[in-house]
Image (cartoon, rainbow, N blue to C red; front, side):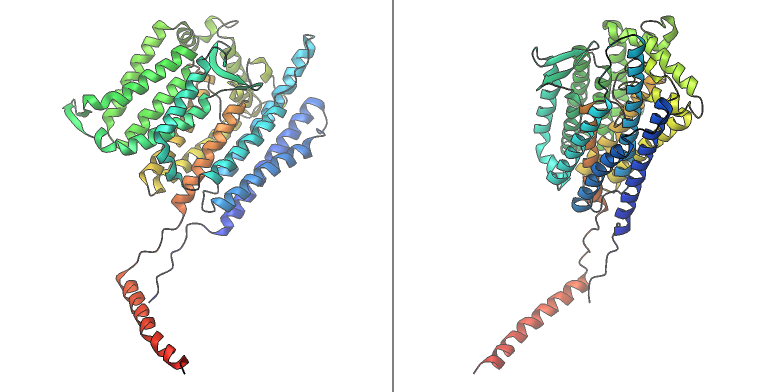
Length: 480
């Protein structure tokens, strides 16, 4: 009796589908790039084919790496990321045209443009993507470096506070200058701290699940177990105080609380987390002037439309101008929004692609998050489940925070929109994030070894005994 064949969850045509979808994403980016050139200059840009070929080579290399080292990985993640990255490059190029036009109107020096630098950072991000997949062949090995990841993450968060390396830009001290480059270390720290949270919570899950008393229908944890949440709360406030970074502090705290809830399945942790968030938010509003200013601007951006509310007001005007279908690529005025290529790139998309374009972009993000959560549900080990869930939630929360701030749903926090916003640190870190998700997805979708049934074991034992008995007879026949 032989072992039954196990039908794999992956077949080669799915890799072909991934390649086809990635090629389609590159074609969409090329068409959008050509549309911008036609609208601005009235002619097809001379670098359209070169732009498409460059993107095609980069994404093809990423596809080949996935095919070789993670053949069972989800085939939709890479095409979705390629589509967002390509669209982000096009919108940044469009904003470069707007910046040049404004510089000419006011007689200023023409800016160098951010799109070429973003393309270089995309290449660096894909190199980091390939390196993560090649080095991390088994995601469970990351659990060995739980506390190392925590130490490195905290060091990266503290680097901007150093007097020599730290750089203050637009009132926030989030960057360091190294070898002529400006780097935001909190992007890499985010990944390291998620690895630490996953490893720590898997190891301490049983302890954190213990309850000491029941209050109002909630099983409250023991006082000694509240330490991790209080530490995460204090650390998030420290980031806010030192770097004036409302977005990162909210992101780190929310990620830890949600991962804690997933690990323990206890609602009381969410209640405690929400309570600490509300208390910290009230304290920050009354203690820190920049937090109070952002909240007041969110409540009434038209109270001071020429100064503190100018950015949000221009963003809302852009969404209103775009309407349902948008003005068309190259036909709007997205350059009137300050820092449109970083914090407010969704406003540029909303003006020129309309509500349809915004919903399409959000749908692609939702698909990436859904596939990440699917990998978490399918993963066979607890560490992989928690790590994939944390990475997916971090991505979804970051999109919600920035889009909610740009549209006036919540106070603006100033984080980048993954793969769309201009920023080297952000794009490299997010390519590394999707590489880890693909590694976990590959392990989750890989067919499990066929179970050894009693019939198979007896057949194998009988075959082995038969071979042992027959060997002496064959030796006798070969003898003199």
